[in-house]
Length: 340
Ligand SMILES: [Zn+2]
Image 1 (cartoon, rainbow, N blue to C red):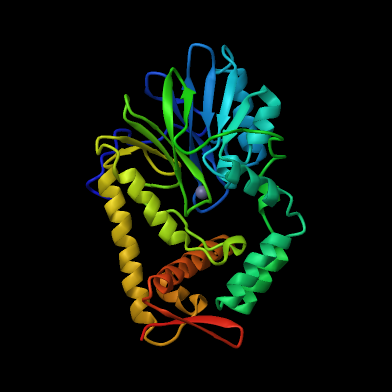
Image 2 (image 1 turned 120 degrees about the horizontal axis):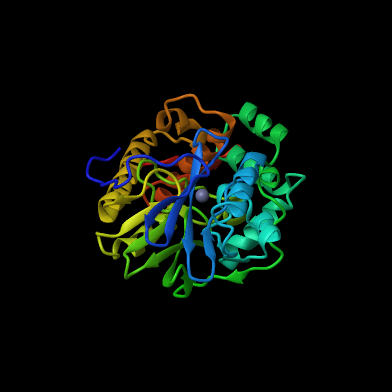
């Protein structure tokens, strides 16, 4: 954990317990069934009702926590709106279900909603297998490809039936939450149109997964945008947030709330620069993303982590190729990169 960030709350509350941060804004931690075992969501109270930012993954235990909250500490006022930062299952997972339970309006960017709806419908793993094919082309070991194909797309299982309609969040737009107006800042790279929310008077940034205190968010080249440069997008979006005041309180989706926004942005930039240097050296010989995995991630990866690791490796190599640092060579159906 970085020494220079300040963490005003040393511990999270128990799963499902509201922890007040400031007047009218509460932190709620929900469990996740992964190595990353939790997500933070945020509840804002106004005179008329509650706004929620992000919802948790579709699991019975998470639904149970929501039922207790809605029938308990939240029951005096309605849940009026559900904001979703992006389509990933820990954020979007229960938005449809919560909407059904409460009648709340769901707000998120159009592109994130469409992506979530599309992946929820991918019950035959057609889209998922396109992603595995992309990994295969980038040199992922065939035994991994087959294990992933045999497992199929976990997304439909992790997300409840999505909201049938949303009220879109748009760039430079604003949204009323609690008794304040929050600015919408759209960032890309981790997801196609993630919404961060910033309140200038209280100096709070709800950062989604864009800036996390101890880990870097996953950035993956996706098959539907195979000619993109997601890491270039991500680093560009960090610049948008670096103009916010340094005394901003950052509320991240994973880890603890912290002060030290610019410091953390600079740490993340340094991390990626180190990866670039490492990959440039590794690519003195032509190498595929699959062939650099072990050097980049020298630990045993599970079936969930291998997807993230491949995504990271590819997005770094693509960034270096698009910046004219690496040549791209396609040989025998495998894409390799070469520094020469
Ligand atoms: Zn995410």
